[in-house]
Length: 279
Figure 1 (cartoon, helix red, strand yellow):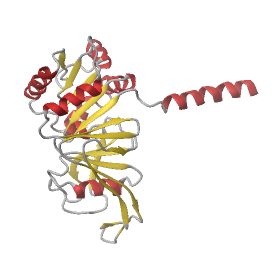
Figure 2 (cartoon, rainbow, N blue to C red):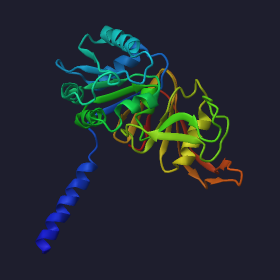
Figure 3 (cartoon, rainbow, N blue to C red):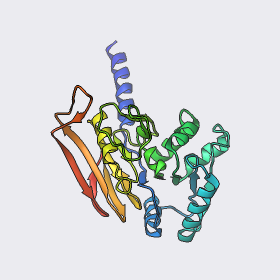
Figure 4 (cartoon, rainbow, N blue to C red):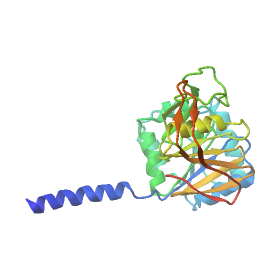
């Protein structure tokens, strides 16, 4: 009986350890806006593509997926003339084994901008979701811009407010339980990403996210700027800044639902800076 118990315990321990193994890949998360050739070259360098490696673009967030694919494909081919494939699973069978195997084997997966909710509607609870995770675990770089940045988080900001239901890019209230989340890709389980951050002045939205999940790290990435995530570190790249919020102290809400806390960790970072995140 003791031997059987030990075997069961050992199996459970092994599963637990394997679940905690860090992915071999990287995340290249762009805050939207213009993507300079220098920034895209840094993404290609991060992916460290070998001769037979290829790139897959996932355009499902975009209202004009073919146009979006054409733009990113043209830019990347200037920098590295290799195979770039357009896998639009909004119009293609998500169970196509040939496409899924190709996605799993890609060394660079790029998620276009648009509407993060549209993207997740296409991939959540499908083999596409699993393939992206497998590729990341096996060493691929998963990149995304704008909506493609938002989907990286487990707790994905949808852009909608729950109480003040009129859409505002900035959120003009700091109310408890006003920010809406949906399930994202979960490549970052414990960090929430917001995008177009300084350009659209999204401090209220990120503070609302922090208040909703005070144990997580919240990161706002400005346009033409990226973070390169490996493990629990993120290196800033690009032309503008990245904001990091975490650890609110004495978080409360008033009887009217107004948020307040005494202080929090707040940092502003530029290219080359390395920041702590929670993967």
